[in-house]
Image (tube, rainbow, N blue to C red):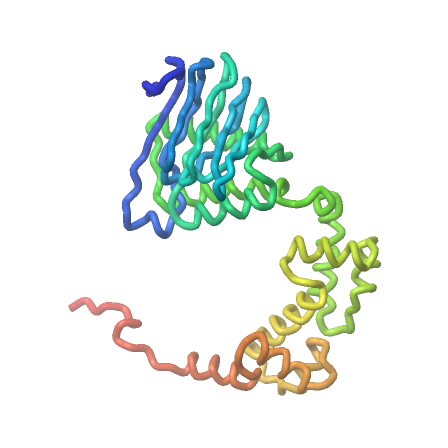
Length: 302
């Protein structure tokens, strides 16, 4: 149905939804979506509004003024660009001229505000990403789905919101990482398939075709870990698998995950897991041996 807001033209589509309070802390959900056609009179000004706003500009120019940390920032989004921001901050968005046409979703619930902050920190509020057209398609499909009377579970709706936000993945990456992400993936694959061998930073950089320094910087940007931290974590992860699925002694497991001396495995394992490998294995055995309680069994016919 069209909105009665100032400057919105009759062919506009504005849909609003109410989510159960019980679901709002767990799921992401759209609290509204639509397709706005607007004149130069269009504006929205608020001090606070609960959801995020994701707006894809089809034609024209959508301007935004938003206050963060007592500073007002100004943005202009033109055709093909996206504005994504947290509406809990004072904001004012408006048409710079006649002929504005944009798609939008208001997203709320779950960790939506934290996700928005992460995306904004990585690539800004004004996003000119390689997957913007895919986001446009997702919003068009969403609007068409609900306008036609479609309905879906909260779980399915939440997955749809995460799918849309996941399309910012390429925009979040720095240009250098986008250019070399295949190289970093090759290094990650090598680590996971050679976890029992000696692995050096220089060796990984050579596999990636990058200098040691450049490789280290891009690797941490992609994974959140330095190459050395990632290698150690991969060894510990594989040790967990062997502890759970075999009866191999700790000394043999140490060899298989790249530690000739079992004391090295034990030291790193305790630092990262909080218990020794043997305690980890005993915990798994004790858990598996626990008898079923009445709550764990199938209810009887009576």
